[in-house]
Amino acid sequence: MRDEIDRAIVRALRRDARLSIRALAEEVHVSRSSAHERVRRLVERGVIQGFSAQIDVAAAGFPVRALLVVDTGATAAGADLADRLLEVPFVTRVHTIAGDVDYVVEIAAPTHDELSNTVLKRVLRMPGVASVRTHLIIDDRSRDPLGD
Image 1: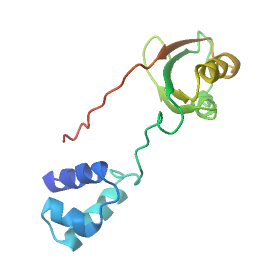
Image 2: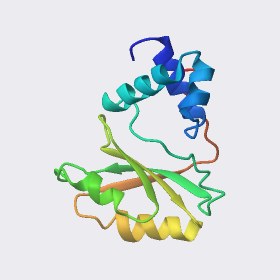
Image 3: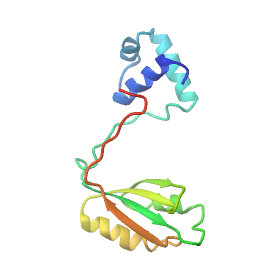
Image 4: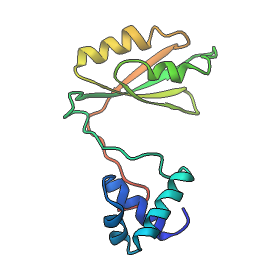
């Protein structure tokens, strides 16, 4: 990002993506036209990739959350495995990683049975998947790297 004003704009929009340009300008102490132009440039440069609501997945009916550590073994899984994993019900994110395993998959399911069925009947049976270790998420915390 270009400067502290851009960082302040991104922090403000991460807190509340519904902020009007007027409210955003007031919060970061610039004119409305300057705020509008800066947001446009941040979007154009790909710093801001969209505006969305943050969802509490447990409150939305998906309280059982887990991380699946997926190993493809000695065989190449194919470049499309991450895309195929994303198509599995309840999968929310797929991370391709370097190291002794190949993917970390985030999953949010309505019940433990649904989680189990998804892992055993969908993920483990996918071509290219050699093994899966499931780690239930008990609690999670995050921190915005931009501060605040």
